[in-house]
Every structure is written in structure tokens, then in C-alpha cells.
Length: 126
Image 1 (tube, rainbow, N blue to C red):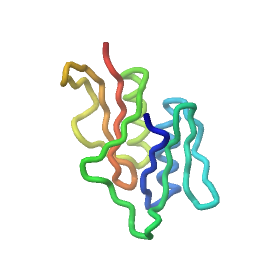
Image 2: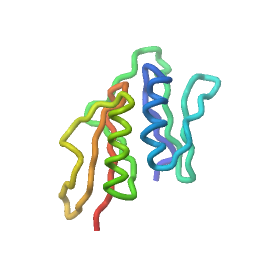
Image 3: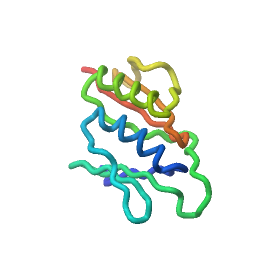
Image 4: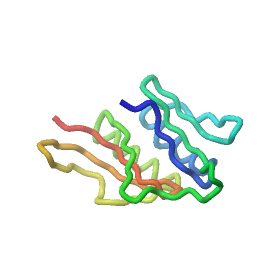
């Protein structure tokens, strides 16, 4: 459904270190910095990117916005969360764990990245 997701970042190097750590947990290679100073993570199914805003204003998180990353297991989501905390992320929402709603059961772990963007690790449970 999506070709790419790009988030604003105030400090590309700090954000790169954070995302290298959490995306490394799910098998992504370290981000690549382009000639415009943006950082890209490429997969077979899409691209995740970080950029300073083009309007030269500070990056800010979207209130009510969340970007979710698919996980293979609850353990992988926990490792993702721990890597994020160890690399400048801040936990938010409830602690990692099982949530139910809308007939679905999921394991979720939420973080704020170094620029305050809200992100989530999601593993769908049977």
C-alpha cells in the first residue's frame, strides 16, 4: 500500500544512530545518507527515510501520528524497544505488551524517536 514513509528529523546523525539500531533488529542495513543529507533505509517492500524539513523550520512530531513497524514476534518487538531506549528513544504509551481491540490481538511497543516522532513495533497474534 505504501511506497515510502519519511519523517522529519532535527539531527540526522542522532536519528540515524537510533533507526540503525531499531531497524537492525528487523534485519535492515544501516541507513544511507544522500547528497542532500537525508537518510534512507531500503527494503524489498518500501523505503523509510529521515529528512530535515524543506521549509527550514524545526522538525516536529505530528500529534496523533504513528508509524508502525511490523515484527515477527513479541521478542523481536521487545528487542526493538530496548534498542530504541539505548539509542536516544523515549518510551511512550503503555509498556510493551498485548493489546486487544476490534477483534484483533496484537503485541505493541511504542517509542518516541530523538525528534519526538511516535513509532510502534507491532506483532499480530493468532
